[in-house]
Image (cartoon, rainbow, N blue to C red; front, top):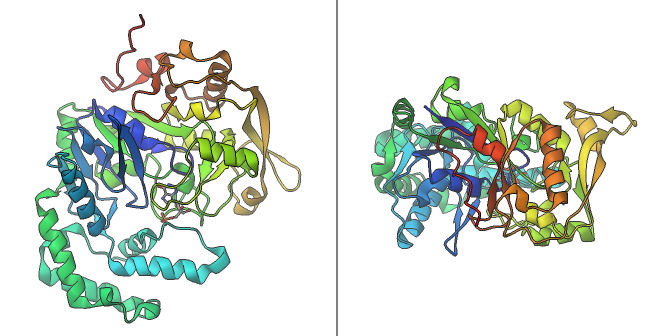
Length: 443
Ligand code: IMP
């Protein structure tokens, strides 16, 4: 029963969509287990670009069961729009299943997200303003409205009234907003219910049955370890757990159902939103990397902050996720830089050397990266398909990263296209049965 969890090992936007898309080719099931439409995957396939927010990446593969698990927060407007767009582009969406227990993002969650950020002013988190935090807050407060509630008008209305009651004060700036009209909101959500009804299911059971039948299930994480509400740079984090452990909770499977955990990391670092970023670069070098890597948010269009690869943070992510393999994406973006810096420790404000990711926010906020300088490479990597095709400096970069983090690299991204990847020998030796394609034959 191979279960493979794929998570972001940095601050999100590591290129998980492309890796999941590749694995989805061989997977029977792809499950999203946390987050919502704060995520954004860009997949380039057959010359077409797909931007997905809520939909599991496997949706582009006919025959793959695509599950939105109970741990996801679902904005039904976004989901129905995404479904519509996929159908318009002639993608078969019949393999989608949505957990009846997933929580719904309501109009007031979006308003509260906006109001919360406005209230924080200069201290704001820089959320995607998609209502993610307020929705998870209602879930924990047991005021949430779930996908299954869409199927019962009476319950839906009652729950909306109860959920709205304690928010009156915070929603005062939106008092006259027609989206807060109880009947209009109920009607709108019932319409979503009709549109989504055929997809609503007991997804935990579906996934467990597939695992029982020895099928390959890929659990697709959103965001990344350093945005984890427990293990990330709190409070500059998202409101869910993007770490691998959450796959069990958010999909409804047990820890023993997970065989492998792959972490996706870029060959450098990026972050959107506020919060500590010890290897952050500014100036022309940052602009160059940002432009070459097209580092602008899929969801919000915001320019991403850019920095050198942070191996202290990556090793931390490897440990809290029990990573069995790494997928290192966008190595091609570093081509042409004369030297490559990789952060191997931090220096605290008091001058202390920090070999581990500091648990205290004040220490982390003032930590400065210290670097090992590796030789750069200038070749175009886009045609490389095996490790041997890579220039020696690029191979050395990979060797250094894998040795430092103590996790083998299974896959390397050398361009945006889905075929612009190298599956390494380490990956082929490690992967769950059938997940990794055979090495390409060389002529
Ligand atoms: P929220 O998830 O919208 O509440 O935003 C909280 C923090 O997580 C902000 O810094 C966002 O920029 C960040 N964030 C949320 N989703 C993503 C993502 O998919 N990629 C990168 N950053 C994200």
